[in-house]
Every structure is written in structure tokens, then in C-alpha cells.
Length: 102
Image (cartoon, rainbow, N blue to C red; front, side, top):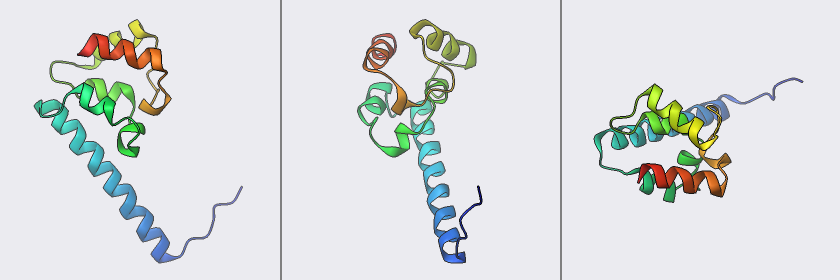
């Protein structure tokens, strides 16, 4: 499979959009870490592409007081794969995460 040929303008536009998405995810992680945003607030925005495309593990690690080990333990308890993204969570998994974290 060959990659599509992009014009310089298209390539620049896609790179700018990707950078903006990375910045938005970084800002969200920062606001979680600082405590200005809660996990419940983030889950209410689960349909937002910025939130939907984040890995659940990364989201949990961004919470204050949660590190890799604690986030991994929560994922195992709920039965979520470490590579699962927010958009791929089932309703039961969302509900269990909300019960544990709110």
C-alpha cells in the first residue's frame, strides 16, 4: 500500500492539526494534575476527540496522587487493557471507573 501524495500545504495543515491535538491533550493532563479539572469532568467530555483519543492509562496517570502502578492496578481491577482509549470504553467500564475515582 502506497501512501497518498500530499501537497506541501496539505502536509503543513495536517502537521498543525496534529500539533494542536497534542497540545490540547497536554493541557488536559496538566489541568488534571493540578486539580483544576476532575476525572468526572473529563468523562463528561468523552465524545470530544481530544478526550476520546487519549489512552485511559495516560488519563489515570495524570490524576494527582496516581502513578503508573496505581493506574495499572485500577485498570486491572476494572478489566481494561492498558492500550484502551477512552472512546473504546464500555458503559460498565465507565461506570466502574467513575465509582472508583469520584
